[in-house]
Image (cartoon, rainbow, N blue to C red; front, side):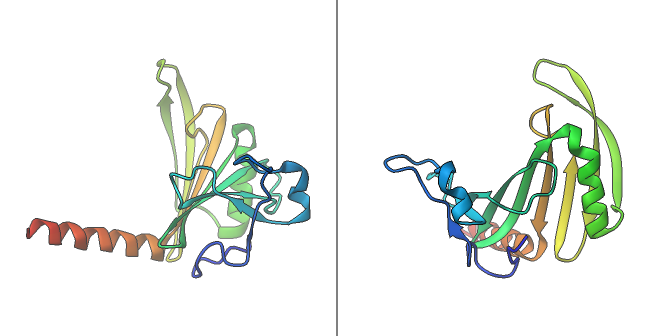
Length: 166
């Protein structure tokens, strides 16, 4: 997708044009800039929404979360009707998933839905594709930058060990 895993984000990607006087993307000018990022929430300076990324044919919204300026999580949300197509895209790119399973998920109101999950685990990327994500209408894909994630995890463990010595 043109976003390197081993370089600080945003790198060469430009910030999306904003509407004058508002903290909102100027959708009328998006086509002028190509792939761009927008920080949706100023209280979360490590979360970015990507606009004008490659069209995967599933109508997705992509966000990136960074850790120490490095991309750590790539999250896609898309209509769950496109789940099989998304699985095909990931299988074509990464091969067959190492794990595939079904589970029942429940809404807060108690409604139950069957959901499929496909998982690919590799040295650089870990990918989880869920048929039902945070909302029963939407599927989610999460791609984890494994080296950055492991570095974050190690630093947190070291901090916890140091704190226990206090």
